[in-house]
Length: 360
Ligand SMILES: *Cc1c(COP(=O)(O)O)cnc(C)c1O
Image (cartoon, helix red, strand yellow):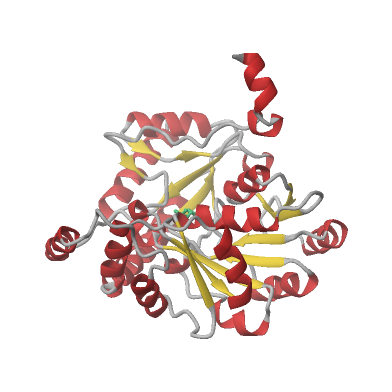
């Protein structure tokens, strides 16, 4: 078997590890930036009844017309823009890398950032450069960024805004400077759009190399797998050719269309999450010896006392709370833990557990 693998599988693929998540059964789940609230009970009944009518013996609409219409309205997508849908924004990132892949070309982002930019660049056989963020406050080192752009001429720059896992928004002025300094595409990944009001959507009309990516995952529909990309119609027509024809299944199409027609329910949940985030940050800051980073997303990054992150993570797990341990994943994230904002009750439990742990 080893011979077979050596002969057939690309060495750069063999060097990867597949994407794994932690087993979360039985835990308070604060590890994956999910919305802790579900649909209200009365909507759940209507939700169930639309699925009863689904023609699951038929292929779904490959253009997902009805869903696109509802999504455009809910996400305030400018009328003149093109729109494509993906099986999560993960798939869209892959479509972009696949379309741009040519030997010697590269994908760029900041580091640390969302892992899929690098993963899909590798799948597509492209080089990847992550420009290190400032180690104190995770801001962009603009001198270095502009130099890397000049030297490597990236085909695409992905910027998660706010960034995952750091939680900070980058200043508009810096992003505009990056957009104007590159001949490649710039994709602003607004996965955390529900938790701030700094969307780059209004800038689309001024820059033909700018694309805005979004998802319904973080607003409360992670299980449906639906992401979207907005930008120049001509550019998106090219990406459309790479997209598998039926990538958005019928249950996702009708389910998301229904959910987005009740967008106000999700907006309300997002505003509760934002309030809870501020309370959580305030309470975390009361713990001594830890650094708490501000956040415009639905998670908070903290730095535990030196050498303590693994212990804190394990102790939290023993008390039934699952978060994300980033210690050891990146030299800028030593001792770092990422906590998703939960319900009021979950956040209180988290804080009381952390108080106990910090006293051990
Ligand atoms: C969570 C996340 C995504 C993933 O979105 P899906 O639509 O669930 O695939 C994309 N970008 C960033 C920055 C994220 O944190």
